[in-house]
Amino acid sequence: MPNVALHGLEEAAGTRYHTTGNQAGKVKPDSPVVVRYADDVVVLCHSQRQAEHVKERLAEWLAPRGLVFNEDKTVIVPLSQGFDFLGFNVRRYHRKLLIKPSKAAIRRIRTRLAMEMRRLRGSNAMMVIITLTPIIRGWAAYYRNVVSSEPPRRVWRLSSLRLRRLLGPGGERSEPARLRPVLGRRSTRRVGGG
Image (cartoon, rainbow, N blue to C red; front, side, top):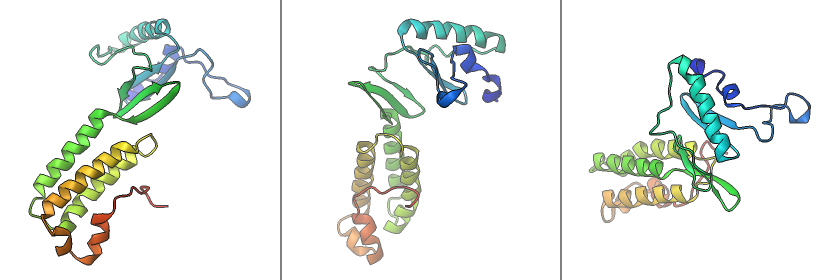
């Protein structure tokens, strides 16, 4: 439903595209860029003044549709300060734009892994691995296209330490030999094979 209600949002924000030539489909210079997923929207502007103007235009456009901005979530910030959007943190560091998992997203996965580990206390290693693997792989797949070497390393470290604690002293040795490589592996691999 949000896609239907918000159709035309880019035009209302003033986003203009090249229509011909090798630039066709690309945003024209000095035009705001709208990124939308369902009812979550980010508008990237070139100046504070342009951002305020676009916000006013969008508020006028949303009003006849019975929609308003959530003022608690609606902020205008420079890219150097950064912002969180759909679990990602978008920020410019010294002229380089970096997109990485947000601190809240890392906190959520760590909390979920800790909760799963507590729930699996007393289970054998195979059950723990069967339960945790889809969670960790899913998280890694969601963030695979962004700058995210450190957060997955922290998530792996947490799950590895908790798994070793869960198994207790000598837990690795008491499991079947086929699990030893899985328990000892510390590298990250691409999700989805290849």
